[in-house]
Amino acid sequence: MAQEWHSTQLEIDATEDLIEVCYEKGWTDGLPVVPPTPDRVEGMLSGTDRDPDELIAAVPPKWGRATVEKVAINAVMAGCKPAYLPLILTAVEAMTAEQFNLHGVQVTTSHVGPMLIVNGPIRKSLEINDGFNLFGQGYRANATIGRALRLICTNIGGALPGELDRAAFGHAGKYTCCIAEKEEASPWDAMHVNRGFEADDSTITVFAAAGPQTVNDHGSNTAEGILNTISENIAAPGNSSGETLLVIGVEHAKTISEDGFSKTDIRRYIADTTDQYSEEDLLVIVAGGPAGRWSIVVPGWGSPSSRAVTLRV
Image (cartoon, rainbow, N blue to C red; front, top):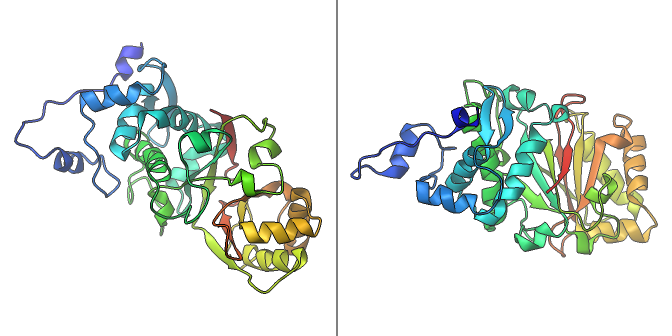
C-alpha cells in the first residue's frame, strides 16, 4: 500500500536546465528552487530515521499524500538542511490537524497562510532567528523551513494561486514565515510552556497568519500605555476578531513586566480594552532586536475558522 505513494523519478535530458524544468512543471513558488535530484533527496532523508514511504498526512485541498519522501523533496527545493527535516515533518502534522483547518486556510479569499513559531532548544541547534529582523531576510533556517511548508501546501496540497488558492491579495509571508521566540529575553514563561509543554521541550506552533503589523510606541513608560497602543492596533477596523499573535519587543516586555504584568494580565487587559477578543484568542511571545520600542501584531483568521496547533518535535 505504501508503494503507491512513492514519488516518481523523471528522466531529464542532460541538456535541459533543471531549474527551468521545475518552473515548467509548476513546482516553484515563483522563485527558483533547488532541483530535487535523487542524490539531494537521499541526503535530505538522512535527517530522519522515518521510513520514506511513511504517510505523514493528506494535504488539502487536493488531499495529496505527504509522505516523508515527498516532504523531503520539497525541503530540498526550498534549500533546507537535512537537520531541518524533523521540524518540517512535525509542522506538516500540525498544520493538517483538524482544528487548524488547512483546507479553509488554503482556499479562503482572506490572505492568511501557515506561520511557524519555534520554541525550545531546537531554536538554537537549528539557528532559527529570534532577534534582529526575525520577520525579514538573512537567516537560512527561517527562510527555508517556512518556504518548505509553502511548497508542500502548493505541490502536494494543490493550492495554486488563482485556482484553488483564492486569496484576494495574499502577503509576503505566504512565501515563508518561520520565527522563534526569544525565550532568554522574556520575563515570562515561553509560549510552549503556556500551551502545556515543558520548558526543555522543542515545539513547533502553526498559526494562520495575515501580514504582520508594526506597533510603534516610543513614548509610553507604563504597561498600560504600551498595552493601550497595542489594543488600538489590534482593534483597528478590518482586523480579524479571531486568534491574534502578539510579538512583544524586548524593550516593551521589560517595561510591561516591571509594572507587574504577567502574560495572563496582558491577555486580560487587551481583551477588556478591545471588547472583541477572549483571552484565549491572544497568543503572546517575546522576540526581536534588543533595542527599539516596537512590537508586532499578527492578525489571524476570523474565529472559529482556524486555531493554532502546537506539537512537540
